[in-house]
Image (cartoon, rainbow, N blue to C red; front, side):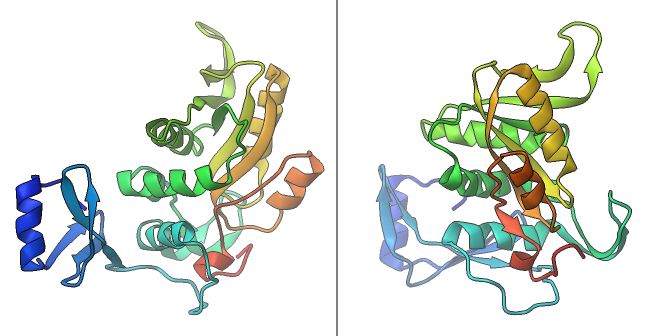
Length: 248
């Protein structure tokens, strides 16, 4: 739903069983003629069917079943973040598909979906969220902001790639405290090295890592690497969820 209407306007539209189509962030929002109006404050908001205009689906047409939140996030990633072509990954491997997951994390509708999915699996005692710049930055900052609107307070931080030698020195920037219980995040991972680098820095600072997560894990090694470090690992989506073979 884009914006809100005055209560009287909502009632008028409800009486007419209004049908409208609005494009938001590349997705087609269709207000069905059979929409059920739900009271929210003084307004009545219809259920919305989200239909992607285009999406770059993988080679598998039958996708794994996900929760409603996971399915909505997958649709956003397929529409905005998956690119098809010939690409060289950070690892040096060649691939026929590329994930620019910041196209999801940096869109308002996308980061809300990321936050909803991550908050569903977040340990109840987690107090901070962050990771290695810059892949983790939009995820950590966005999720912390969305969480605050739901009454969940999470401090956010960023791990610099190199130590700063002036001002506030070191590799950590943000509101991390030594006794925090930390969720390490990243937008996309193939091998898991960025996640583990952030884990090492956070532990050296004195905080406890309670979870590691990414929007999409396109590889096969991250779960084992995190397990070897004693870190629980739960990606929001995998390559298989998007219709691709892991590690390709």
